[in-house]
Amino acid sequence: MTLLRQAEISVPASPVQAFPDYRVTSLIVACAIFMEQMDATVLATALPTMARDFHVTAPSMSIAITSYLLMLAVLIPASGAMADRFGVKRVFSASIGVFVAGSILCAWTSSLPFMVAARLLQGAGGAMMAPIGRLILLRMVDRRNLVSAMSWSLVPAFLGPLIGPPLGGFIVTYLDWRWIFYLNVPIGLLGFVLVRRLIPEIPNESAPARFDFLGFALCGIALGCLLFGFETIGQNTALLSAIALFTVGSLAGAGYLWHARQHPAPLVDLSLLKIDSFRLSVISGSLMRVTQGAQPFLLPLMFQIGFGLSAMRSGQLILATSLGALLMRTATPRLLRLVGFRRGMVVNGVLSSLGYAVCAFFRPDWPFGLMFALLVCCGAFMSFQFGAYNTVAYEAVPSSRMSAASSLYTTLQQLMLSVGVCSGALILKLSMGFEHHAEPRIMDFSIAFLLVSLISLSSTRWHVAFAPNAGHELSGHRAKTAP
Image (tube, rainbow, N blue to C red; front, side):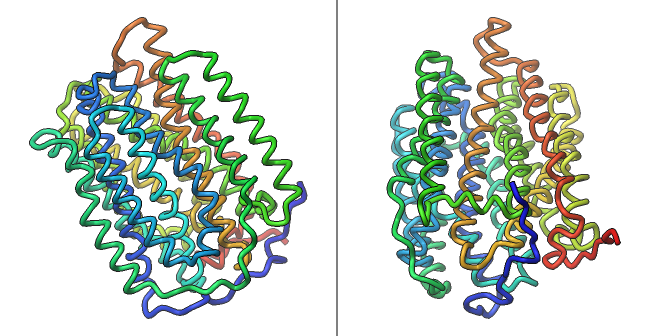
């Protein structure tokens, strides 16, 4: 594949429409992300309790997470086209409304199949929130403020995971897990009002292309079948069903690749991968997100089932990763200015992987404070890494292709988070089957953490491939270049 020189790609010097303060825009966008992230972390803490109510094993509850992530992966590719056709503001506010409706149905569920259906609806709303929120920032915020804007938008987004675990533990211990979903209602209504009142209409620079229905169908079938294939294996159901899903998904994926080369405006524009910084950020970020996706699934189960901790105590420990992420967000712009994107991602990528590998050695007799401190470091490392990915990916993307880039990037991001959850569940199931026990034990969790950490560690190869001056205009860092 021929590499495109970043200097040859035009980038807008200013946003489409100015806004009084980019921090206000960032925080409004983050309101929706806050709701989505808090919901995910609160649910992870409640999985063992919900499993008992639904009369299923705890690892089987992974489908409650992957069904939501599946809908994200299927619908996110259409987010850019929807925003271009119906307007960024309208689609963003509507997605919040659908998410709130799905949350209410989740609270009313009485069985795992009903929960899966409600989570799919919830995911239909969440699919539009993250990519369109990022698109709002990319179109409205000036380049020199983009790193800071991304950090501001993710501060409340990390407050969600920060509040979620202890809040989930409190709800499960003293109330009913259904209140986890009712919490989304007031937050969603607030976000809806703020979007309608404070986010201006953002005009398109060109007429929207005709919607690619065939591409949407092929892409949805491919992503859905592949993810449910992973989930089927993780649930120890029929192997033939998993093979059939993988076969159909692979054929649909191959069909989409052929279709995308023929279509003038494909739903997911894979030609964006010819842009160096975008392609490298996608590949390395995808590998890193496998570990990040497995972590919120594995940690609560390990603490509650493997260690025998209460939901409240487990939530307090999981809070540490979000606290570390929140603290790092304020330092990310300065660190990137000091060390640059390439060096920062290479070094910090190794630290991120090793940090979660350490979780494999946690034991019930370890001091609470030591485990908390190590998880704070894990959260800080991952926060810096994803802050760098989410910014440098768009460095050389032309403004006319921002919608397509945001859709593709977020699709792959959610897909790999789903793969992370499925991988964690699958490794647990395989380890349990090998040792012939019904519930996961501490060693099963240790094996799972080590294997998913090796996946993220493999991203180092792609971090090294970034240009020494990658993202220097965004970070303000000036790398020394060879003469």
